[in-house]
Amino acid sequence: MRKRCFFVLFLVVQLLFTVGLGVAMAYSFAADDPPYRLRVGNLNLEGYSQAAAWEEIRKNIPTEVEVQGRLYPLSTAESSERARAWLRKQYVLPGTSLPEKLGAFIEKFRGEKVLADILLREEIVPQLEQIKKEIDRPVSAASFVDHEGQALIIAEEVGYAFDVEEAWQKIARSYSDQPVSLSVNVIEVNPTEEQLALLKDVLGEYVTFFNPNDANRTNNLRVAAQALNNTLVAPGEEFSFNRTVGERTAEAGYKEAVVFIDQSLLLSDGGGICQDSSTLYQAVRQANLPVVERNSHTLPVDYVPRGQDATVAYGLLDFRFRNDMEKYLLIRAKVENNWLKIQIVGCADENHPPRDSVEGYYVSSTQRMK
Image (cartoon, rainbow, N blue to C red; front, side, top):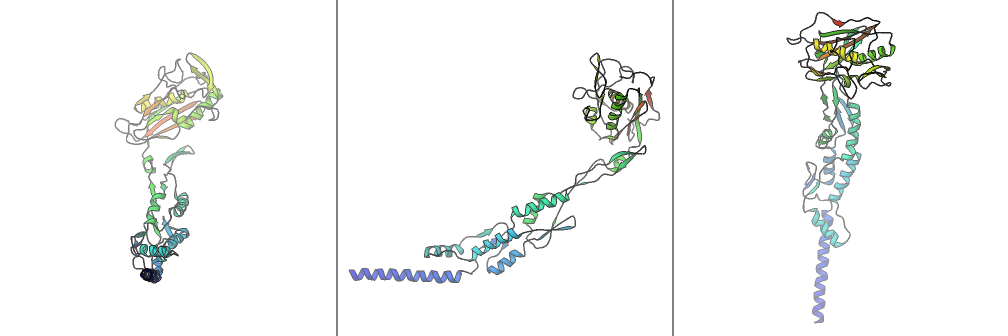
């Protein structure tokens, strides 16, 4: 019985030794063998030696991007090191004990080994964000400016927007060491110089007069007129006097002058600019444009005919009209000596014919204006 047990034990030891030797030999021979089903990104590297696999990966890592004809270097050191370290692990069998070695040997030749992306998002995206800072440009619409008494057109400038996420996705899928061409979104703008060049017809024009000796009121008329001057109203757009002129504050350049509040005359910043809104209203009427909101003063004024004024109060009362034409409209406002003139300029049509004369409401230049 004792001999039989000894013999069985001897067989077990011999078996374990044989298996261990076999595993050790297999482990040794398989250490540099290509693992089964090895893939990095869209690269199938099954059957490649470690050196050949790394060379194939290296050839598919971009080092530059091209944006608007300019080359930008792309740093991929972290991504490359990560990919190379991962690749080494697939070829070198880890483990020190027999069970660990056996498990590593089996794992190497079982299942798919995948590194989904060569490039690290956290390495590439910050570089793309720096490129975006250089590329992006806001749009600049065409506009009118005054020069020596003439309205000149400043041409538009299209905008540029670099999409970082779109760029990252394209780079991650490129798998080439050639420069990756990245697109830039062009932002079109309206109005254009061509559109503004069509605005040649005076559709409405009105003049009102004031007492230039009332310095504060004259100042307010001038500040509001400057805010109105060269304002463009797009087709279908609703113009708002309050939105265009803004709040009447000392910081905006307004001074205290007489205003109507209910049935009283009081001093307030911006007093007098209802003459601007009323003069604009008369020009809008002449241009046959639809009025959306108009309010009259509680007391009569003497710079327009009775009942034809348009009072405004920021946040309370507004003067609004709509551009019902197919082209842009231009508001021109000018203050000189003792008069204010406002024009509506556009492209005349059947419902909005051009005017050939200036209308106005004439009063004594010495009369105190409200």
